[in-house]
Image 1 (cartoon, rainbow, N blue to C red):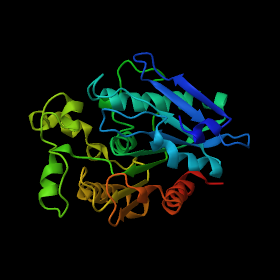
Image 2 (cartoon, helix red, strand yellow):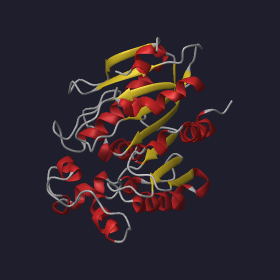
Image 3 (tube, helix red, strand yellow):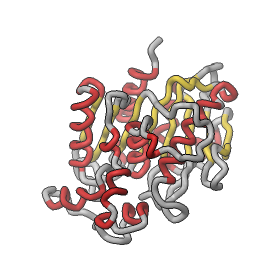
Length: 286
C-alpha cells in the first residue's frame, strides 16, 4: 500500500463482499471531512485479467476523488488463473450489490455510483455498465439478489471490447501490436479458457457491446492513439454503438494523442479533473 493510501485516516480494508473466494474483497476510503452520504467511485483494477490488486498504484488517480467529496471503493475480483469468465463480472456485480446493501453503515450514497477502471478494469467497468439488466451475466447463486447492480456512470480507460477483432484492427492501424490476441495464451484466451476463435459465443458474452440498451448509463471513454495492446478503434467503435442507442450527449470519447497503454497522460491532474468533472455531471444533481 502506498504512502498516499496509508495517510487516509477514514478507511476500511479487506471487507468481504462474497463467500466463494478470498479474492472477493474490497477497500473503502472516505474523504477526510464530511458526514456523507458520499457519492461513490468504484475502482476496478486492470492487469490483463491475470494480475493486479485493489491497492496497487492503479488506484492513485481515483483517490483524487476524495478531495471532491467522493467515497472510493476499490475491489478485487477472481483473476483468470483462479476462475474463468464469467466469474470476473459476477464478482464486480456482487461488489456493487454489497456496496448498495451496506451503504448506510459506511456513509455511502447507494443511488450515486460510478465505475472507473483501466484496461481489463475498463472492460469490466464497461461490461458491468451495459449488462446491469442482463440476467445471463448474473451469478445464479448471488447474494443481495433483490438489489440492482445498475450504476449512474462509467469511465472506461482503454478497455477491450470485442476480443475477436483486436488483431484485425491492428492490421489496419499504424501502431505495431505487442501481442497476438488470437493466441491460445493471450490474456483474453486465458480468461475464456480456450483460444478466442474457438469460443465465439463466449467472446460475444464478454463483449460490453452485446448488452447496450436504452438503460445503459452515460460513458466517458478515453484511449491513447498509440496503444500497442488494445487497438484504439475498439473504443471508437464502442462509443459509436453506445451513441446510437443512448445518444451522443451521454457518451464522451476522448482520444489522447500519442498516449500508449496506461501512459502518464491519463493520470495528469488536468485529465483526472476531466474525469471527475464527468462524474460530477451525473452524480451530483443538487
